[in-house]
Length: 103
Image (cartoon, rainbow, N blue to C red; front, side, top):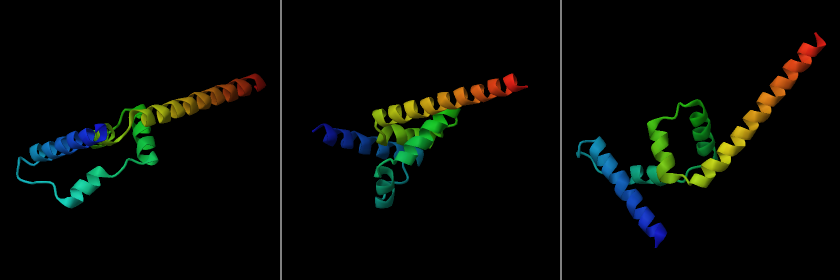
């Protein structure tokens, strides 16, 4: 029942958004409906997380993430990217300190 209601609200939100974007002159066709309902991939999530780290996420991708993505996927990928970033900074600092000690 929960998935049925979530699907209903998602379709309603997408159709209302398209209605207001086009001034009420266009309706969803089947191609747009299938394009909007495709599952979000790992790479889509990864690109969205990287864009969020740099602060350059587009409005279209943000709306897609909120309508199709699951929060725990974004949290896990975000933690992974943050851990990689911390390890990268640590490695660079170690290299700089090693180079400074050798000089």
